[in-house]
Amino acid sequence: MSNDCNRPQPALLLALLLFVASGVASAQVQQVYRYVDVDGKVVYSDKPPPPNAKDAQAKRVTANSIETSALSYATQQAQERYPVTLYSFACGVVCETAQGLLNKRGVPHTVIDVSAGDGADKLKKLSGGLDAPALQVGEQYASGFNEGKWQALLTDAGYPKTPPPRTTPVGKPAAAPDLSAVTQTAQPTIPPKGNYPQ
Image 1 (cartoon, rainbow, N blue to C red):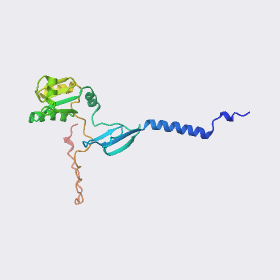
Image 2 (cartoon, helix red, strand yellow):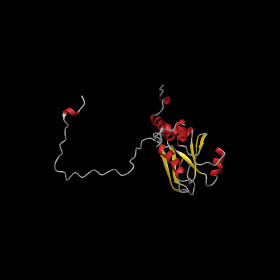
Image 3 (cartoon, rainbow, N blue to C red):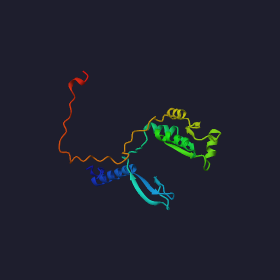
Image 4 (cartoon, helix red, strand yellow):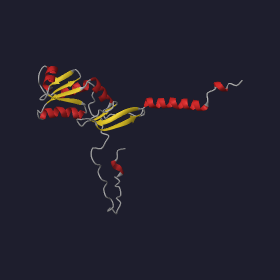
Protein backbone atom coordinates (compact mmCIF):
# COMPACT_ATOMS: atom_id res chain seq x y z
CA MET A 1 0.00 0.00 0.00
CA SER A 2 1.35 3.47 -0.97
CA ASN A 3 1.77 6.51 1.32
CA ASP A 4 0.94 8.96 -1.53
CA CYS A 5 -2.35 10.00 0.13
CA ASN A 6 -0.46 11.29 3.20
CA ARG A 7 2.00 13.33 1.14
CA PRO A 8 0.87 16.93 0.35
CA GLN A 9 0.29 17.70 -3.29
CA PRO A 10 2.77 20.20 -4.87
CA ALA A 11 0.01 22.62 -5.91
CA LEU A 12 -1.45 22.66 -2.39
CA LEU A 13 2.00 23.17 -0.87
CA LEU A 14 2.73 26.07 -3.27
CA ALA A 15 -0.62 27.73 -2.45
CA LEU A 16 0.08 27.41 1.27
CA LEU A 17 3.55 28.96 0.88
CA LEU A 18 2.14 31.88 -1.15
CA PHE A 19 -0.55 32.50 1.46
CA VAL A 20 2.01 32.60 4.31
CA ALA A 21 4.37 34.84 2.30
CA SER A 22 1.60 37.31 1.44
CA GLY A 23 0.54 37.44 5.10
CA VAL A 24 4.09 38.24 6.21
CA ALA A 25 4.47 40.89 3.47
CA SER A 26 1.17 42.56 4.31
CA ALA A 27 2.09 42.64 8.00
CA GLN A 28 5.26 44.60 7.12
CA VAL A 29 3.47 47.19 4.93
CA GLN A 30 1.68 50.08 6.57
CA GLN A 31 -0.81 52.47 5.04
CA VAL A 32 0.00 56.15 5.54
CA TYR A 33 -2.21 59.02 4.41
CA ARG A 34 -1.05 62.47 3.35
CA TYR A 35 -3.56 65.28 3.09
CA VAL A 36 -4.08 69.01 3.57
CA ASP A 37 -6.43 69.88 6.44
CA VAL A 38 -8.93 72.77 6.58
CA ASP A 39 -6.23 75.08 8.04
CA GLY A 40 -3.94 74.42 5.07
CA LYS A 41 -1.47 72.24 7.02
CA VAL A 42 -0.01 69.07 5.50
CA VAL A 43 -0.85 66.06 7.68
CA TYR A 44 0.63 62.55 7.64
CA SER A 45 -1.41 59.95 9.51
CA ASP A 46 -2.11 56.25 9.66
CA LYS A 47 -5.84 57.06 9.91
CA PRO A 48 -7.89 57.84 6.78
CA PRO A 49 -8.31 61.57 6.08
CA PRO A 50 -11.55 63.35 7.04
CA PRO A 51 -14.09 64.07 4.29
CA ASN A 52 -13.15 67.78 4.14
CA ALA A 53 -9.43 67.04 3.50
CA LYS A 54 -7.82 68.28 0.31
CA ASP A 55 -5.23 66.56 -1.88
CA ALA A 56 -5.58 63.22 -0.04
CA GLN A 57 -3.06 60.55 -1.00
CA ALA A 58 -2.57 57.02 0.29
CA LYS A 59 1.02 55.85 0.61
CA ARG A 60 2.35 52.43 1.47
CA VAL A 61 5.34 52.29 3.79
CA THR A 62 7.28 49.06 3.98
CA ALA A 63 9.46 47.81 6.81
CA ASN A 64 12.54 48.90 4.86
CA SER A 65 11.83 52.60 5.34
CA ILE A 66 14.22 54.52 7.55
CA GLU A 67 13.05 57.44 9.61
CA THR A 68 15.40 60.39 9.38
CA SER A 69 15.51 63.66 11.22
CA ALA A 70 17.45 66.87 10.81
CA LEU A 71 18.06 66.80 14.56
CA SER A 72 21.05 65.02 16.04
CA TYR A 73 20.47 62.07 18.34
CA ALA A 74 21.60 64.09 21.37
CA THR A 75 19.14 66.88 20.49
CA GLN A 76 16.30 64.39 20.04
CA GLN A 77 17.05 62.83 23.42
CA ALA A 78 17.21 66.21 25.15
CA GLN A 79 14.00 67.35 23.46
CA GLU A 80 12.20 64.22 24.62
CA ARG A 81 13.38 64.57 28.23
CA TYR A 82 13.50 68.35 28.58
CA PRO A 83 11.29 70.18 26.06
CA VAL A 84 12.07 73.88 25.66
CA THR A 85 9.49 76.67 25.75
CA LEU A 86 10.24 80.34 25.17
CA TYR A 87 7.79 82.81 26.71
CA SER A 88 8.14 86.01 24.73
CA PHE A 89 6.40 88.98 23.11
CA ALA A 90 7.33 91.81 20.74
CA CYS A 91 9.82 93.40 23.15
CA GLY A 92 12.40 94.29 20.52
CA VAL A 93 16.09 93.47 20.67
CA VAL A 94 15.97 91.52 23.94
CA CYS A 95 13.28 89.07 22.76
CA GLU A 96 14.87 88.76 19.31
CA THR A 97 18.25 87.99 20.91
CA ALA A 98 16.63 85.40 23.18
CA GLN A 99 15.03 83.60 20.25
CA GLY A 100 18.23 83.98 18.22
CA LEU A 101 20.19 82.15 20.93
CA LEU A 102 17.89 79.13 20.63
CA ASN A 103 17.93 79.20 16.84
CA LYS A 104 21.71 79.59 16.60
CA ARG A 105 22.22 76.67 18.95
CA GLY A 106 19.72 74.56 16.98
CA VAL A 107 17.37 73.96 19.92
CA PRO A 108 13.83 72.96 18.90
CA HIS A 109 11.39 74.98 20.97
CA THR A 110 7.83 76.21 21.36
CA VAL A 111 7.18 79.95 21.51
CA ILE A 112 4.33 81.23 23.68
CA ASP A 113 3.35 84.84 23.09
CA VAL A 114 2.56 86.26 26.54
CA SER A 115 0.77 89.25 25.01
CA ALA A 116 -1.88 87.11 23.29
CA GLY A 117 -4.44 84.53 24.37
CA ASP A 118 -3.66 82.68 27.56
CA GLY A 119 0.14 83.12 27.21
CA ALA A 120 0.34 85.47 30.22
CA ASP A 121 -1.61 83.00 32.37
CA LYS A 122 0.77 80.17 31.40
CA LEU A 123 3.82 82.25 32.29
CA LYS A 124 2.29 83.37 35.59
CA LYS A 125 1.46 79.77 36.47
CA LEU A 126 5.05 78.75 35.70
CA SER A 127 6.99 81.54 37.38
CA GLY A 128 4.49 83.43 39.53
CA GLY A 129 5.22 86.62 37.57
CA LEU A 130 5.13 88.12 34.12
CA ASP A 131 8.84 88.70 33.44
CA ALA A 132 9.50 87.93 29.78
CA PRO A 133 11.33 86.69 27.91
CA ALA A 134 11.51 83.54 30.00
CA LEU A 135 12.93 80.14 29.17
CA GLN A 136 11.56 76.81 30.37
CA VAL A 137 13.72 73.71 29.92
CA GLY A 138 11.85 70.69 31.27
CA GLU A 139 10.86 71.66 34.82
CA GLN A 140 13.54 74.36 35.14
CA TYR A 141 13.00 77.96 34.08
CA ALA A 142 14.76 81.30 34.01
CA SER A 143 12.92 84.63 33.94
CA GLY A 144 14.49 87.51 32.05
CA PHE A 145 17.12 87.04 29.36
CA ASN A 146 20.50 86.06 30.77
CA GLU A 147 22.61 84.38 28.10
CA GLY A 148 24.96 82.60 30.53
CA LYS A 149 22.12 81.19 32.61
CA TRP A 150 20.14 80.14 29.54
CA GLN A 151 23.17 78.44 27.97
CA ALA A 152 23.81 76.57 31.24
CA LEU A 153 20.18 75.36 31.41
CA LEU A 154 20.39 74.04 27.84
CA THR A 155 23.78 72.39 28.39
CA ASP A 156 22.63 70.73 31.62
CA ALA A 157 19.61 69.34 29.75
CA GLY A 158 21.92 67.75 27.16
CA TYR A 159 21.38 70.05 24.19
CA PRO A 160 24.55 70.21 22.04
CA LYS A 161 26.38 73.55 22.16
CA THR A 162 26.43 73.80 18.37
CA PRO A 163 23.87 72.64 15.82
CA PRO A 164 24.77 69.74 13.51
CA PRO A 165 26.58 70.77 10.31
CA ARG A 166 24.35 71.73 7.39
CA THR A 167 24.12 68.93 4.84
CA THR A 168 22.19 70.79 2.16
CA PRO A 169 23.53 73.79 0.30
CA VAL A 170 22.32 77.17 1.51
CA GLY A 171 22.21 78.88 -1.83
CA LYS A 172 22.97 78.34 -5.45
CA PRO A 173 26.46 76.90 -6.02
CA ALA A 174 28.94 79.29 -7.58
CA ALA A 175 29.39 78.92 -11.32
CA ALA A 176 32.69 77.55 -12.52
CA PRO A 177 34.93 80.21 -14.04
CA ASP A 178 35.07 80.40 -17.83
CA LEU A 179 38.54 79.20 -18.78
CA SER A 180 38.04 79.20 -22.56
CA ALA A 181 39.90 82.52 -22.93
CA VAL A 182 43.00 81.24 -21.14
CA THR A 183 45.66 80.34 -23.70
CA GLN A 184 48.77 79.87 -21.59
CA THR A 185 49.16 77.42 -18.76
CA ALA A 186 50.58 78.86 -15.60
CA GLN A 187 53.67 77.17 -14.22
CA PRO A 188 53.68 76.63 -10.46
CA THR A 189 56.22 78.68 -8.57
CA ILE A 190 58.52 76.50 -6.53
CA PRO A 191 59.96 78.25 -3.48
CA PRO A 192 63.67 77.97 -2.77
CA LYS A 193 64.65 74.89 -0.83
CA GLY A 194 66.01 76.80 2.15
CA ASN A 195 62.59 78.24 3.16
CA TYR A 196 61.18 74.92 4.43
CA PRO A 197 61.80 73.78 7.99
CA GLN A 198 63.97 70.67 8.26
